[in-house]
Image 1 (cartoon, rainbow, N blue to C red):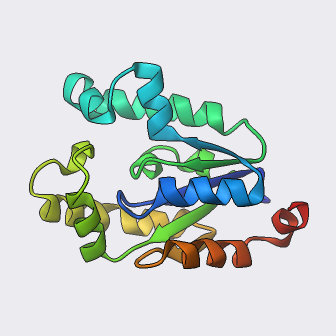
Image 2 (image 1 turned 180 degrees about the vertical axis):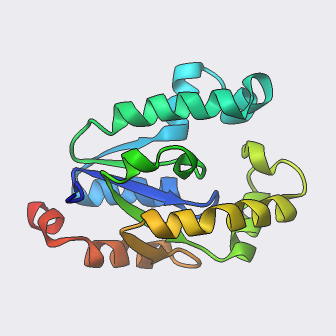
Image 3 (image 1 turned 90 degrees about the horizontal axis):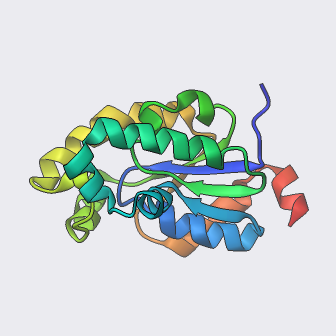
Length: 173
């Protein structure tokens, strides 16, 4: 099955830069931009952290899947996904062009420590991040169409993505 370039999903761990890079990339490619977590927060009128606390992770994953399905029917879109989107949306992700933002574990831990809105990383960030990283890295690698290093420089990461995108995307812009 040929991958769609009408839907580009940014995947990766919490703290890898998905929202920031997705926004900039959408501007550069003139694609619409959506962030699954932001959409869920707006729909539910609750933070992701509160949804996890009040309704639980299973409820959140169901809402996330519904929101993701809605976004995946839009053409010329960049979707910054939640870090766990890969856990139960692989079939949908097989249809999109997936950019995996790779980042070293110690940098992810450092970035996550500055953000109090990550429900799976509220306490003992280092231990939990290591566990999530080990659970998810093989899935990210398997479903990615492009891997980009986001350890240090966002501008360089964006340039790398733009240089490595399939030609049919670049021709449009």
